[in-house]
Image (tube, rainbow, N blue to C red; front, side, top):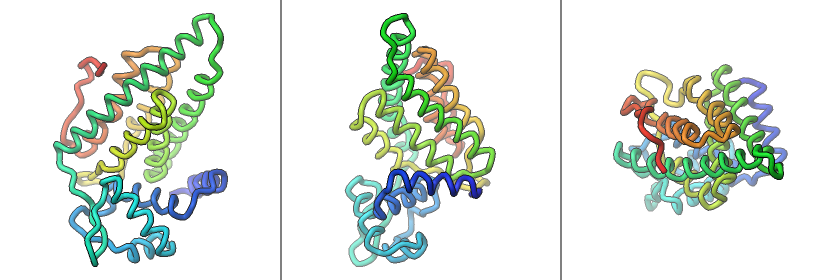
Length: 245
């Protein structure tokens, strides 16, 4: 991770002032999603705390949060283990996220069109799209700097805000919980490596939202979410297929 990326992360931490539990949860979720934690291994809270350089209590609290979300399971007197995710599980997760994300994209496109149609300007949609644009631009910078972990943080924030702005907090929470249950496992490459196209997808999504092009925005969102499967070579989305309604 580059120094500029580290400074950006520290800046976000200072502004948001997250608790130690929240910081531990963010790091553990990232390690799970990027395949840095093994499904077949049992992890102790003490061992994870040592790796993170944190005290035991917030790490244990973070792991119990993941247990309640269904991402990990507690093994009595041993520690914690990731719940296995099969190819079918991954497909189900992506399909549910697509339903939510395409609905959010449609709502944002409708608001963008209404704002530009000569009626009362919607300052809210402009500010929200500007924030999504900022995250998308930062994602390109992170990919070019080979700062994959920072990219995944930015990507998670992007999809959280897409759902939050389009459908509300509950939809965002559901989608992120599903995302955190996913796994990225590379074949012959770093398990957390992303490609520039994945980052470019975010740029494309914002441009299509701003233009109010609902069908194209939904297709772009679908393509981006299926990156989870492209990276492991399991499947390629059919870009010619209509976006889910």
